Each structure stands twice: as structure tokens, then as C-alpha cells.
Image 1 (tube, rainbow, N blue to C red):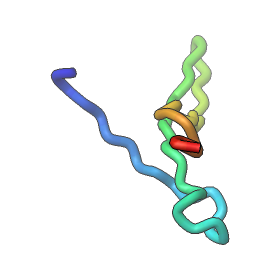
Image 2: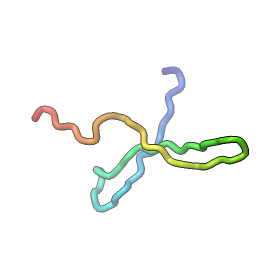
Image 3: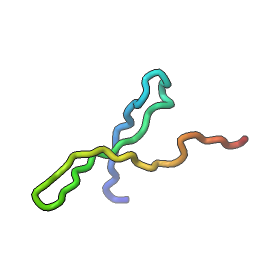
Image 4: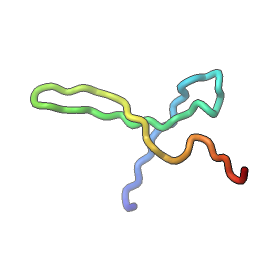
Length: 53
């Protein structure tokens, strides 16, 4: 990948500590004259790694 992008991991529930951090991608959806800013969840792999269990 020649131009990698970095995205912040944002805490969704502070009571869970580091387990609540998720990577979000800010997006702007456009249709004709209308636009809407939204946030998408990036799929960076498993939320919990159970190996070697």
C-alpha cells in the first residue's frame, strides 16, 4: 500500500477501558444537492482473539 491511512480508535464505553475502543471512519454521503455526514465502523479484524483456546 503506497498511501496508508490512519484512523482514530474511539472509546464507545469508558467503563470497559481499552476493550471499548473501535476504529471509526468519518464519511460524507452525497445525493444530488443533499449531503449527510456519518461515521462508519471499520472492519480491522476480530473484536476478541480467542487463540490459542
